[in-house]
Length: 223
Image: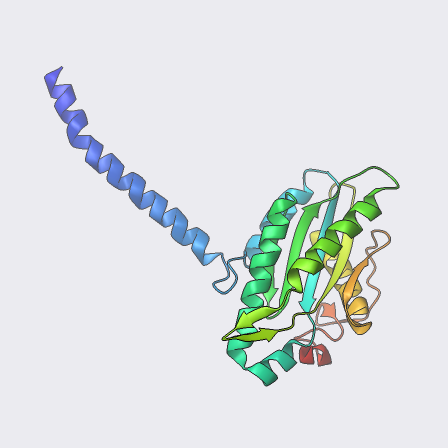
């Protein structure tokens, strides 16, 4: 018995050491999947979690968000101001999504995405979702303070809803992106797609909506 106790006592520090090592490794792996500026999930990590959310078969809303006139913020106030706005937007979006049983990610640049639950029954879903989106825009459009300066923030949000399983996340993101683009052309706010549609409304260039960054006619980069 003494031998067993001695062996267990000797092994305990080693086991504790491996436990701490494993915890640190998990944190490093998770940290590598987080956007360093906003703390949100990177695109790949967000899409992984969004697909899991959709697989549950419950009502979900997929959001694509874009900052309006972001290039002007950089040109007028400097890139530090642009980083501050992106950072604040990410934190605010992440807190909003978490409060609605959702998840958020940064797609790149000033583009973000989120997936959240949709409350209510037939006839009340759109109203409840609109109230959530108004709350989101109210949070996101609070000015950002940097070195004593207040920087105005404006966003455009496109939303695609899903009620069925399985669901194509890429198609939902594309639909939400189209409605984000439409409302952005009108000056900002949010636009909810009336129904799920797998056929893109806008022409596709290099696999993305025409006008998006990375396409041949990516004028939207001026944002």
